[in-house]
Length: 258
Image (cartoon, rainbow, N blue to C red; front, top):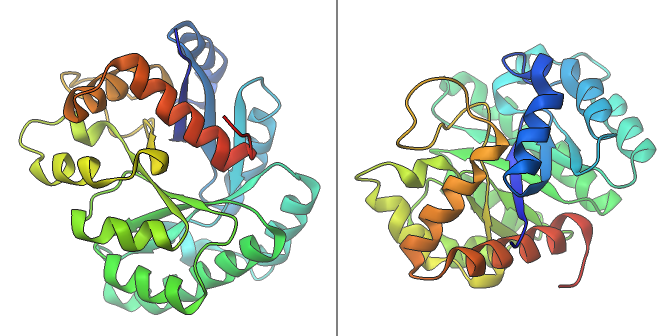
């Protein structure tokens, strides 16, 4: 069976951290061999680093827009030091979230640009969160000349029309359990618009529990459900879908040539 690559998860999240070893084992038993574990704030970066010592767990370190107000004065220096000490790590989760109060939007942009420029300077991939801010995200990325090392726009929720623009800016497009929800017409249209070599799948665990599951927390093992639904939506086999997204994730996050 072709292995699966969970392109975005949070194994350090307090809801699942204590059970992380068992969660990773369950994922591997389901064929989810690699997982990109993304940090969200200074307080979880060390936990992400520790988790990345386990086989198949990759790390990204970043300041998520939800936590920009919790940063210390030395957060950026701390981030750069950590990245330099972790040559294989990416930058993430970073981004913009305009579902939050407007007074945070300017600060979000400032923090996002600091991290994007750091990623470009260090030649690191990025993992991006974007909610209700796609047009602004595109404007900022265009001003910066795109994402040189490449990046993943995780749990994509935007319109299909933006996908060609985002791809030209260096982004891969990742889909989570939201595409398994009945009535997610926008998600169906979007996944069908992504170039085959730019498509990723993820769980965003412990959030984004895929249908038909309704209770408990999400975990990387459920990437198999996302893979099956994505294959169905694209009209291809599960194995072909797994190989496509595995190759793409390895190329993006590890520089591996399929």
